[in-house]
Image: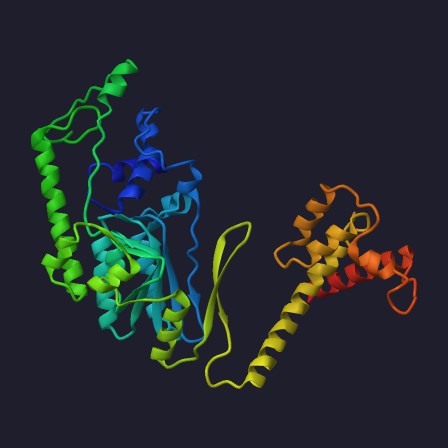
Length: 418
């Protein structure tokens, strides 16, 4: 049912979306309309392109900047579809941003944008909401990292400051509408569709018959109205006249081109943008953004680094304390892994798994169970038993090593209870 809702809102309505993404979505949705052999958009190699869940976790930095990712195709409402298809809803984004603006610890918001655009419905409302929020006192910056096209560009243009990364793209200020005529495909399949309706325009634009000139003209009028709204909105937000916006003819521009036209304020990295933003807000600066992936979802994390004005000694002490906390937290997990059944028969793998902070004991146990027993012992065992190590000491025996593993496992159990 959710995919059918996506189909209904994708065809015969204005879209603020970059052309290649439109092809990808079309190739994914066409089979659900009975066009199994549809090959117009071979860009979609597999369905994972559509269902991959993007990183969307807002992150508050020590400098008071709330980083809000804007990732994937954009739709109005549809939070359930959001989670399934990789799309992101305007309403959800607006709710996140409005909540962040009400938080005392948030001094400003940075929109981290990587989106080809999406539906026209809901986009202009979000853009106006951002404009109103800017006037409320807290600044909202945005960066195309690496793509802000069509609807996503309007969101970027609605920010107090707009940037693009060096390899990024921005623009595609245009509107499109897709009508699919599958009447011939249905005829070949021996299928006929019959509408029973009231109202002359009730079935305008349906996919089971050719688009008439009259209906096409009505759809074109809708597109023209949305385009004018789009152009005027960009001209209101950027240092560009409406004629200059129209002259882009919905082109997608590389970073330097976008900056020269006035579509963005500059070309710089996400980290440089965040540093400049924190400095502008007068809070701590020097936050580094790192991206990492776990089994469940992608996450974005803000990691504080040495800020200007802090002595190297103070920074070194802070790093040492942070590492000690991390060591204590990770020690229990490592001890559990080394004490797992089968670790003694696979010491090399157990040692490797114990040193990986992303590997949980449960996952390590499955990996160990699925791995063959090692011959000759692991690296750690070889070092411990090497008579050249420790001034000729042959090292602990196998029984001693086993006892140590059990001791580590016991320590890990105690730590996990704290």
